[in-house]
Length: 164
Image (cartoon, rainbow, N blue to C red; front, side, top):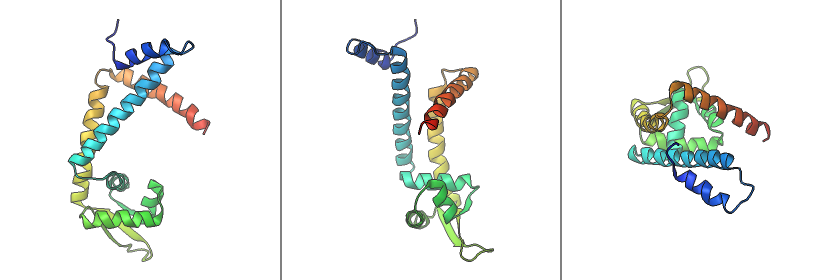
């Protein structure tokens, strides 16, 4: 038999309380929730270590996804925040030296935001710390198992997204 974890104990306890509990569903959902909570705590530690607030990291991450240069409007849309919220975020990041802003050379009404080397380094440090833990957690699985898990989760998420 496989090694037991804390979820096995959880399922055993709840099976005694809820007669019609599906132990497999309970185990899968609880493990997903606990893994997400673990990864969230790891992300919070990484952000603290790299002296970033979540909104700063999210904005730097989004900007990096635009290859380090985007308009303020593009960033606001990508992050699904109001333009005024984005302005506040960019003010903070510019004060910290993580981004620069300037008018577009093609459209003076457009404000372009660019990731600075310091901003890229800070974002990348936090990203790499998170990635190390994600890979550590996935280490017990073979590449084939990882691909299978990704496919299974995709199928579940497609159903969940379809019902929203």
